[in-house]
Image 1 (cartoon, one colour):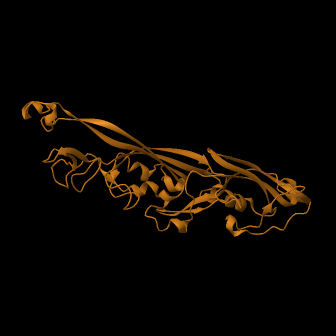
Image 2 (image 1 turned 90 degrees about the vertical axis):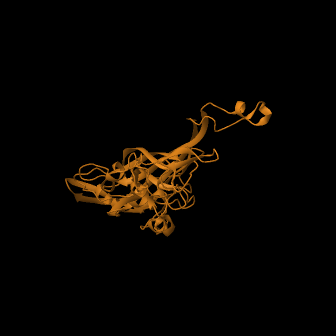
Image 3 (image 1 turned 120 degrees about the vertical axis):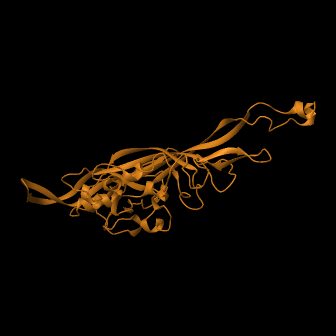
Length: 330
């Protein structure tokens, strides 16, 4: 079979020449489209002489910590036709068109003209953006490679405010008899937020002692600033409940991730944050978890900041933390 010319296609995110494999006029492609996700498997042809440590990382993408609080991402290959699908794995690679033998290591090995790589493309549950595209965001990593889920609910508060409310005249009786002497129920709303940050290099999350410092320092605290920017969740309304850190295997060599090949595994991490959002009606400047309910002069219930000494500088129920650090490498 005649092999088409290999060439570089800039829109694919690859920097080496390649083309799609066809056999007898057919392209061996598997495609699946459903509400649970989209998937395509196709075979690429590349030059056999290319370093596999260059080819695979460019196809599947990889992150790398370049400095304190700075993470760079080489985005995965984009499908040439369905450009919202990205390369996630290379489950099979085989040489094609043998040319001869080479003496290497402990014996002879064949060398070939091409490699055939089966590439699996998938739709991703998060935004895929380049370093340049997120450079203008206050919290860049919150705006790429992060899943976001919102589960709202409500709960009743029982407020001791007897006599604050009265039945209207049609209920009958005088004003005294219409006065309500029971505790008052009040429905308040809260939301459980889940944020899942994907593909974090080991040396960007953990210290050499194995401590995820940026995560650990903020557990049980509320956001000191609006998050992720001035138009986001107001300061004080987010409470970090917990974080589940899970390892995943990266399909690239450790040194591509900035790790040691002879010591470190090719490992990435996923952090799943659990956050409680609470923003009851404020009576003043402050909002959220460090406020408590108080009736104003007209029996309207509002929430105000409460501290140990009654001043704005006093200790609050929850300490504050810059939530941007939850999405920064150390």
